[in-house]
Length: 254
Image (cartoon, rainbow, N blue to C red; front, side, top):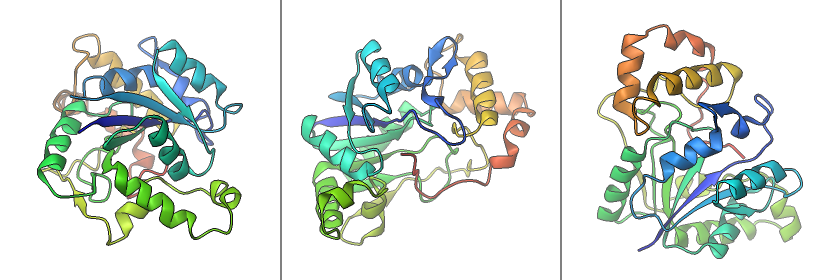
């Protein structure tokens, strides 16, 4: 059974333009995410999935600099982008991560992979039942489920051109339709009040402080170390507190 990681990343962002190329500890956000993803066990390919080539040329150049696979597809329809990327980079399973999660926890993903393989499911998510920090979101799903979702959604449009031009998140259909067997991974403690996603300038300030506090001591830091830091430095909560409740049940980054 083969697993690919698709990192969903575009240069465009209305609230924080160019955020995937912003630097922390002298590394771009994409580089930091790629470092963390590289610690996921038994991965066949890591692929940066982006939109229109001309609009996202800087993302593609960064992928090339980092020697990471990339796929440029539909700017709007992320479901189509993922499906076509899965044809170029075949695998049995796909892990979806968005580039606004530079603190993604590889130990949690490794645990989720074990749960997925032990269960007869099509998609696993931590996004719907919010018990982990906002910024840890990911999904694991079968390539066959992605293909079914793509075909079902495409059949609702009169042409591929119209289908491609509409914003469709890659996993929303799979998580909503009963034909797919879903599994919600939950934490034993509710940590949803912690916001460590990258969407606003205040988020960047917080994530930068976390990296500067932990990265040089231990590049493999994870949830345990982040929680200890928040406990030690309570003022961290205040940095992006105005956006703590701004959480979607599904990460809809394009």
